[in-house]
Length: 90
Image 1 (cartoon, rainbow, N blue to C red):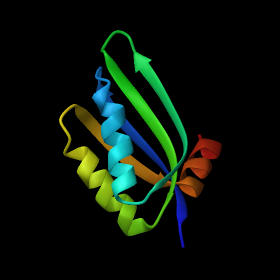
Image 2 (cartoon, rainbow, N blue to C red):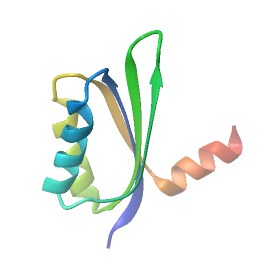
Image 3 (cartoon, one colour):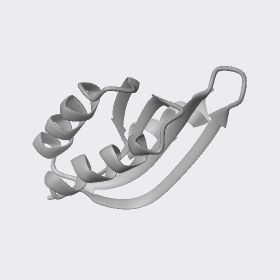
């Protein structure tokens, strides 16, 4: 069964970062439901937030692969329920 996850990645100001994210998700058969990107003008970094559906082992492998890419500073993922609960508490 596929669960929903929120994947957050910080990358440098580079167009290929988006392509790397999408390619890694596609290789592991992860369905992207929603994508948002915001930039920080002062530091030249992008914050990519994806809402995806995947199996736990697929999301772990994809995040590990994306984390090793050049230009990606950090990446993390959470189940969507955990994200919603943490936003309600804070």
